[in-house]
Image (cartoon, rainbow, N blue to C red):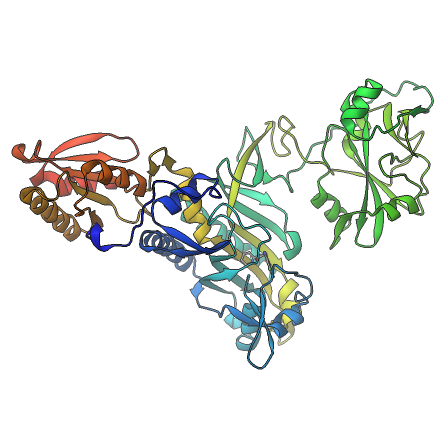
Length: 570
Ligand code: 9G3
């Protein structure tokens, strides 16, 4: 393909709102252009990469026995009213009305649509299991789109949905998808981990996120240094090995005047104690219950674990009124003297390691010290309520927990009957009895995968495409396109390599060599072939590997075989 014919508007500089490498490079390499916050046009090079990622996804989904369909982007509100989600989602769900003023949503996902389809079209166990998938544009009106294609408002997702008659069937479908995802991300060339994740609002159990490891990732991954155990921070478990607090008697609890001392750091300073000796008392509204949560001052509450403890739908910090209503004082909240009728007191296991603690005094400007759990206050439930920290014991092996950051590029869920019940997706079993279908759902962020690949494969000169998803395999560049022989040889090389099945971008533009080399490094094709007056007399051209900078002088009559062999390794 001649570069002078293709729209590749490369840039030297990018707008300041592009903070991360992939966002900058998508714009500079002339691959994407925003038309609104979080809404992008994919230009020719990006579309070629998207098509390659989609081809790998399709190949593995089809190999796993899934069937491709294409569902509509606009969805009638009735479906979301039937599942009960129309009122659950706020402004993130993009809504519109049709000409008859009927309400619709722009689809952020398709559980309702696909469950309704299967409810209408399948009603016998003989037709199950089935796995339907699509590759389609999704809409989610993110409050803060950022990082280019990593978090945008319109994006391309592969979403699949499995329908089984039994839990074992779902387990089998889930495992087939899990394996397909391992193969997909390996073939795409991503450095990724499958991490245990919380099912969140979507419900169900057994959910994994596929995380592309990169520093700009918004998610923290906790992994063991001695096994392939990995979990996202919401889910990662701590290991409590039992009370180690000395049971020796402790002086009676004592009030301490701490005017205006509210934060852990101020308390550490004022009372000359360690953060671990202070109990954070956090008052939450969990659905409609008021809960006082205790975690050590050196730990962080994990709100997802609190939500799961109560199997709640909503978890929010309590209001000042709620805090006063249970007899506590904002800024000086503590567990001592509260009425268990008015508030549940739950605590993270690790507060049991502290025998003499500092807590809020439930009185303005006062704290209590020498407070002992069991003597001075009771706890309704002890459980794992904190975020893991680096160095914690791994819950699965004798390793220690380390942190990494990642971007979620895939997510697999065991849904169970959450949607099939609501949407009436049933089947008649072998005894003619009506049963509810058991579902799984499986997503891949296709456009986000493109961005993650750039995040993981770039240097100061630009993108470095893995060969499997590169927009083209080889960049052919004559040092001076105006020199007849250089142009002719470049054209012939382009034809030969194309005939051999390689995808070639021929830079036929009348630009200076330096400009063409800079653009080639920016666009990042795996190989660059330079045609020059220096080497042509020897019947040679230079082949250069973008990732390593390695160069080879290759005879023209050996070029095709050489390039084919080299590209297979990139
Ligand atoms: C919404 C909006 C945003 C959403 C959802 C619904 C995320 C929503 C979770 C999923 C679960 C799986 C199938 C493919 C894999 C992921 N954001 N989720 O349900 F209305 Cl506005 O999408 N869906």
